[in-house]
Length: 149
Image 1 (cartoon, rainbow, N blue to C red):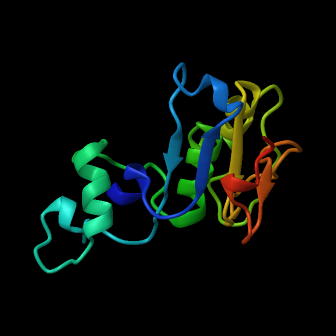
Image 2 (cartoon, rainbow, N blue to C red):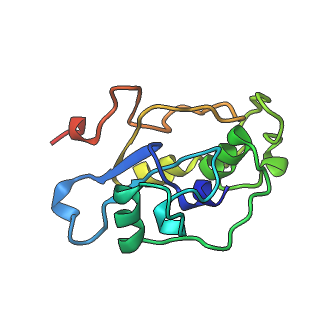
Image 3 (tube, helix red, strand yellow):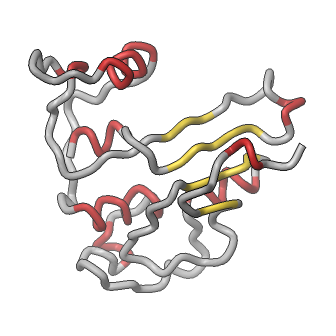
C-alpha cells in the first residue's frame, strides 16, 4: 500500500492548460500502482529493476511511513479519487458503487476547475459512481497531447 500512496504507475496525467500559464503553475504527473509492496529500487530492494521509477522518486516525493485505511485496490482508489476515507463515503465495500456525497467532487474536477486538462488512461474502478465532468478524457487512448491548443 506504500506504493499506492506513493502514486506510481499509470492512473493519470494532468497537464497545464492553457500552456501560457506554465510558469505560474506546475505540470502534474500522477502515477498509481496497486497490489504490491515496496518491491522497487527506490525502496531499497536490490533485486528489483525499476530505473525509471527510481529516477522519478529521486526527483520527487517518496513516502516511507504510510498506511492505508482501505488496504484493498478499489477501496484505496476510492480514497484517492474522493479525498475521503471510504467508510465516510460508503465506498469501503468492493463494488458498492454508492454515489459521491452531495456537494463533494473527485480531485480531477478541482484540477479541471483550476484550468488543468485531466486525462486518465484508463482505470476507473472506484467504489463510487463517477459524476459527470471528472475527466477531460478517460480511455485506453487518453493522452495529454490531445488537449486543445
